[in-house]
Amino acid sequence: MLQRLHEQADQEHGPLSNLATEDLMRLAVAGQIFMTCQTALSAGRTSPISRIARNVGSLNRDTHYPEGDVYDQETASQYYFHSHRHADEEHGHFHTFLRARAIPSGIRPAPYGGRAKRPTGRDAVCHLIAVSTDPEGHPTSLFTTNRWVTGESFYAAHDVIALLPLFRITRETPCQTTNAWLTALLQLFAPQIAILLRARDARILSWKAEHPKGDAFEDRNLEVTSSMAINPQLQIADVRDELERRGLTNLS
Image (cartoon, rainbow, N blue to C red):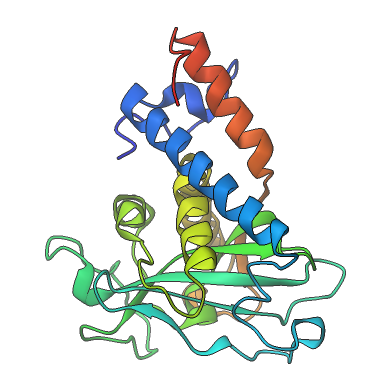
């Protein structure tokens, strides 16, 4: 569970070199699952998006796909896909969450002294990460958002990082392959997500300092708080290279 992930990437080998070998091997397994799902989708001439959204070529702005979101009763994990940002930036994106009922009692929302009403109760959500895609459904970037964007109960970065392994969509509907694809993707990029979450918190703190009279968490001028381009195939190759650097070459 990301036992030794440092805040700054290692200059020579990148963030993967900071992982314990057991965590690195988890990334390798996640990469295998991701590619199995991606291959199955490609073979069927479909995409993760088209399997959960009808009329995928003409997505309605701000509509959640599928209707009512995807929610796993067993793990309290949740996601949906929608499109509302500028067309030149992305085709759309997935938002991923964990509901409060799955969050350990020792992890609580970050302190907040503003006036906005915060969601409470077992169904309040913690936003984990958003995943941008191209029109074919290939993931192109990860990004974090300010609290108001998803209406979440905002948790500090170190707590969200601890919650990431709990995100699992195990149900068969609306598409078991898409569910497994997204679950594996978050596991595969856990080191980068950790970096983005820390950058998110740093950005919000900076915004507070720049706008001392405002409520940084509710400021509509601050939406995306950190982002990073991703390439799953390159990440999988980097994981393999790091394992080989450690003398682990017979993984299957």
